[in-house]
Each structure stands twice: as structure tokens, then as C-alpha cells.
Length: 103
Image: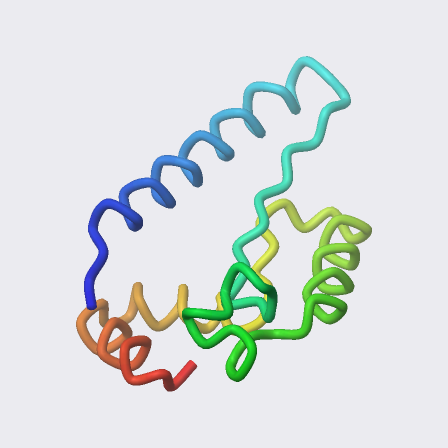
């Protein structure tokens, strides 16, 4: 499944986060962090398989906390970092892998 509108929205959010980070870091003490999570096990993701395949919320929270503590401005949670790398290496293969539930 390819969801272009969802992907477009995520891309726009990433671009906006980068622009804010660059703008605010030069004039203020404000830090802009971007969190990119994989599937998290919550009630909201139940229908998408979150209870079975999702990352425990406590694990996600710890990864986010650690990322902020270490000033990692782009925080990949769970499998999101591997998905990101795989997509830039081979978008079609990464989309297929994602749709097969291999992440």
C-alpha cells in the first residue's frame, strides 16, 4: 500500500521542522526536535496491528527522552530509522517490505 497523501504530509512536516530548527537556532535558545516513530502499541493503533506489532509506549517514551537528552534533533523511534534508510536506498523494496509487515 502506498499512501501518497500521508507521505506528503510527513515530508512537509519534516521540511517545516528543519526550517524552524535552522531559523530558531540562530536567533533563540529554542530547540526544535522531530520525532519519527514506528508503530506504537496504543488504543489508536489497535486496528493497524499496534497491539501485536507495535512498540511498547514505555520503550518509545524512553527513546524519545534519550534523543532529547542527547540533543538528537531528528529522533527515530523503533524501526523508523531502518525504514528511513531502506527507503532512500530502494523506495520500492522498502514499501514492499513495509507492506509485508517485515519491520
